[in-house]
Amino acid sequence: MAPAGDREGYWGKPTSTLDWCEENYVVSHYIAEFWNTVSNLIFILPPIYGAIQSYRDGLETRYIIAYLCVAAVGLGSWCFHMTLKYEMQLLDELPMIYSCCIFVYCLYECFKYKKTINYPLLFILIGYSIGVSIVYLNWKQPVFHQVMYGTLVAVLVLRSVYIVLWVYPWLRGLGYTSLTVFLLGFFLWNVDNIFCDKLRGLRARLPPLVSVMTQFHAWWHILTGLGSYLHILFSLYSRTLYLKYRPKVKFLFGIWPVLLVESTNKQESAKKQ
Ligand SMILES: CCCCCCCC/C=C\CCCCCCCC(=O)N[C@@H](CO)[C@H](O)/C=C/CCCCCCCCCCCCC
Ligand SMILES: [Ca+2]
Ligand SMILES: [Zn+2]
Image (cartoon, rainbow, N blue to C red; front, side, top):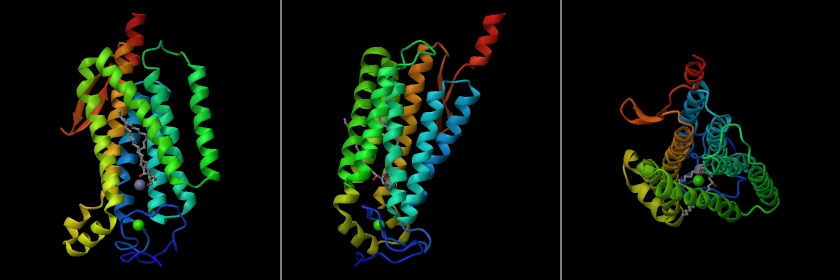
């Protein structure tokens, strides 16, 4: 029987191996976990903007792919939380591994000459992605996926700390903000899982607008979406600084950070003159 608070809806019974704390089909008959679904917009819109901007600035393809992979996680996660179907869960969880591998490649290769490819690292990361996918398709244990994803995040954290301690100390603000926001999201992800019964009880007693604030899986999306975006900015800043593109962080509408670089096209034509 479904836990108290859940309803039945358009997509039928959940087949996913995980069903998060948000009560199913309460806000809409067509969306299983409404807040967990719409909060994915942060994984979709800013990275698409980032990919377009990076393309216009002539930045390296690996960063455009990194942005687009985060957008793919967001789309997969949207489908998963909307339907709670196992196939959609895979569209959410496997791209998390792939995008993190691309982040690792970008951050570990940011002090290399342009147009160089590190084949050994590439093979390790592709092997890791394929290995995790094969094991996870056969062994449907969410903890396995969480550990494999957490390992990649730890590898990123180590490299970020190295960069802000030893290479670009003035990037501390951006590096540590991205890390803190991400870890705060992880903390709330745990709160949502551990105190689910209490949170559900509390939500039943709170006015609707306040109870939405206790959807901590949705907060995890918002904070990891922001943390991942800031992490790409950090990685891109390190890279473009190394390539002497004079990066600058600007705030769109005074709040949303974006990276501006001296266009590579402009640099090419300056060189020719
Ligand atoms: C230095 C800053 C690091 C920032 C790293 C950013 C890496 C971003 C990579 C990919 C973007 C995806 C972001 C997460 C999407 C979440 C979608 C989601 O909610 N998926 C769930 C289903 O809806 C899925 O089942 C959730 C899995 C959660 C796994 C939690 C593991 C967290 C591990 C954190 C470990 C921190 C280690 C710190 C070590 C110092
Ligand atoms: Ca649920
Ligand atoms: Zn989620």
